[in-house]
Length: 553
Image (cartoon, rainbow, N blue to C red; front, top):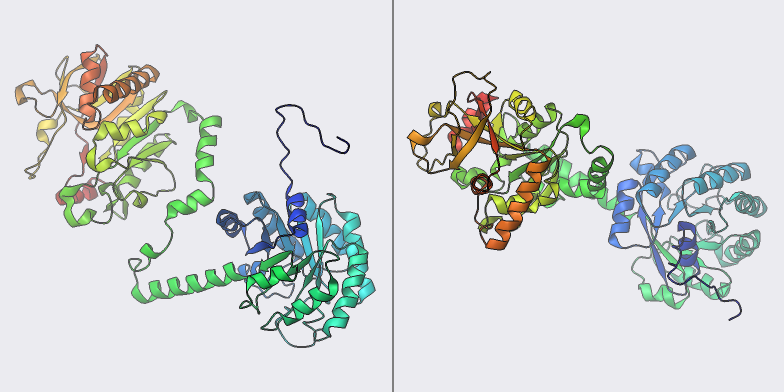
C-alpha cells in the first residue's frame, strides 16, 4: 500500500522520543495535562501518578532554590535542575523558560542546551527580561512583537531535534491589553514558527480564554494554565478546543503546606511521635530514588567486594517477650545506645567488608528501613518459622554467604574467623555456653554436640564438625551453643537451597527452624564445620537483654 510503513516480521515499533511525545500531546485532539514539578524527586512523583508530561515551573524551581520568580536563579542553575528531572523520568518535560533568559542569542544557546539535556520543549513569554511573575502587579510591559518573533525563530533554528517544541506564551490579557492585542501577537508568533500558543489569564473565570479560542479557530495548538480560574469545569476546556492544560504550581504549594505543618508540630512537641505515622516511610523515598536498581547493579558490577561474602539476616519476628517495646516495631529495630539493634549488626558486617546485607522482614516490616540494606518480605511470618523466612531470600543464597539472626550482637573478629574457614558450611559455637545465664522462664538455646569437645585452646585449629544440633540436648551431650551465625561456601549455599526446596515438598518447611535445616543436612552426610568462640556475643530476647546489649556495646 502506497505510503505505508513496512516492518520486518517480529520487529517492534519504535518508542517515541520525549520530544515526539510532547509534540503528540500538543497536537492531540483530546485534552492533555502537564503537572508541575520542580526537582528530580517531584518529577518522579508526577510520572508515578500517571501524568504523560511534566511542567517544569519557573516559579516552583525558583522557590525550591529559595529565590524570587524574577530570574534571580540563573538559566544555568535552572538547567542543572532540569537535567536531574530529565534523567529521573521517561516522560517529556516542557520547561517554563520565562522570557528565554535574555535576547535571541540567549534563546539560541538555551534551546541547544535543553535539547542536549533531554528536555522536550520550552515555553517563553512575551515580557521583558528580567521577568516579573504574571500574578504580581498590573499593566506589566510586553516585549516588542518583532523582537519576540525573532527570538522564536532563533530558537527554532537552534534546536538539535526537529520535534523539539517552542510554545509562545501570550501575556496580553495579563497586561490588560485585551483580545485584539492577544490575537495580533498570536498571529505573529505562529508565523514565526511557534509550535503552540499558551494563552494566559488571571481572571477567576475562563471568559478570556474561551473568547480567544473562539476567534483563533484551531490554527495551532492552545495551552492554558487554569491556576486562577480553577473552578471552571475541565470539560469546558475540551469544548473550546484546548490541547493542553497545565497544573502549574500545586506540588510546590502542597509541599510548603506539608513542610510547614510538620516542622511546626515537631518544634512544638519536641518529638517525632505525632508526625511519623502521617507521612511516607523512608523505604518509599529509597524506592523513588532507585535504590533497588543500585543494589542490582552492585551485584552485577561488584558481585564480591574484596572477595567478601554477602549476608542474609532473618528479622521477621516480633519478639513478643519484649511486650510493649515491640508493639510498633520488630525487636531488631529496638533502640540500643541511640540506634536500632539491627543497625549495630549491619555495622559489624560492613566493618568486616560485607557490603551486601539482605534482611528478611515480616512483623511491622515498614519499620525496617535502613538505607544500607536490601529487604525481602515474609508476609506469612505470623504462621511460619525461620526456614520459611530464609526461603523468601533463596535467590540471595549463593556463593559465599553469611546467615544470621537479626537480634544478635557479636564481636567483629568472629566474622574474620568465620570467613577464614574453607568448609562448605561453618557455624560459630560458644564454647563457654555454661557461663550464659538468663532469668527468663522461656529461655531457648541452640545447643550443639560436636565431633570433639572444646580443647581449652581457642587457637587450636584442628577441624571440629557438628554431630547434633537442637534445643533439647541434655547437658552431658552439649559441647557448645550456636550463636546464630553461619557461613556458607558456594557448595554449602547449593545444599541449603536444595534442602529448603526438599522441605517445601515434604511439608516440613512452614514451621521449621534453622536448627532443623542444619540437622537435616548433617543427617544427609554434609560436613558442617564448627569454630569455637569465647562467649563474646548475646541475643536480645527480653528487656534485661536490652540493658546487656547497651553494656556490650
